[in-house]
Image (cartoon, rainbow, N blue to C red):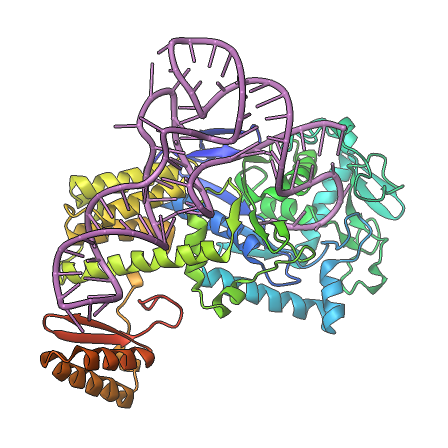
Length: 491
RNA sequence: GGCGCAGUACCCAAGUGGGAAGGGAGAGGUCUGCAAAACCUUCACGAGUCGGUUCGACUCCGACCUGCGCCUCCA
């Protein structure tokens, strides 16, 4: 078991990770609200969580990864009176709430799959766990942490002294109504709704009976209820986007610890934002601000999903990352170079069996060790990646060893290195191939006659057919030019 | 008004109280009839600005400037 260091938002320091139960990690990651497509900023956070899970597993931990899918209770408005996002989306599209949820859930996992993000061990939907939420709210109420006002059940933050510790909030310094209308029903501006019976839910398709009346749950309660159900009342790691620190996670802590009376989450990890600075659009990506980019839009623009994963690996998860097409181009070029290096090594290694990681020579082993140290040091993927480059470019490391080491690193990076194959020539139309071969033969004749103006003209013609040509002492070889800018076929 | 984070080469982006990773782009070179590819070399005497602490600071402290995020939508 390798020592693992992580930055804990609770306490704001990097500390040696210690799970509750040796060798095991209970990990809860905040999942999507499935009322729209995920944008690439959202996806950055899921890539970060995937790297965390993969890194912990590579270091020897047995990780149970739980992720929620929010399909009810998440409001559109800034305050506690807006419509439910799911209901609004369903209305706009003239479909049922559950149809919307299913569609965008599928879209989400399709995107994460294309990014080589492993599916969590448990994916749980909020609507399947309302009874668990009601039971948990009951425990909070029994502890005297709630009050009922205006038809809704509120959590009273004044009853929870540690409220805001995660976000370093000082209740008396928060400016109530800085952005939103003050809810007259609230005793304290930071109070939040546990259960709604009032609101614009007359149109709410999904309502449940509860001790507080027919209605639906507040957004925050689902994570508390479901994480406890699957991981127990105290869990090792809870991760999510940094925006969740002051509200969502702060409220989750308050209600969870109010219910159980014990510490709920030992390690809080938060991924920073992907930010834009282009065409007048600055800052984080959101639908209202514009610049809402989906993974599919990148694919449509000719990028491979893994180009985006690679792009994200270039920055530390706790740093804001500047997104730009230029940056993505840079990542694509780098990934192509990486893939080409691996393919070249594979060719050099030939049929030699790859050694086990434990049997690597000192040079390769040192690269792998430095890689794992970087990863175990609060997921320093940029440094880890530098070790991969160093490994691939060290001429003293035998190809089979370099490959074995690279594939081991790729268990965490997940760039599909082990699955790389030469582009399949079989898919090329034979008629087209014959045409290209004929031109190459014609050019060879011209070249032999030193008629270079003719040979160059023929080459231009070949290239115009969408073919990449390469001369070598043994003759010319060719392949189809990649459509997406990468040479190798990728998984 | 309050709180938090950040300012590193053309771009993206790391580590570090004492030699400033890595990638992309650029430049030069080897190879080639010429290309392409590959490989090699090169690319911040300086880290927003100004002070301070220190034998020594990009790294710590302070001020200022600029940017980003948050103060009940948000990854």
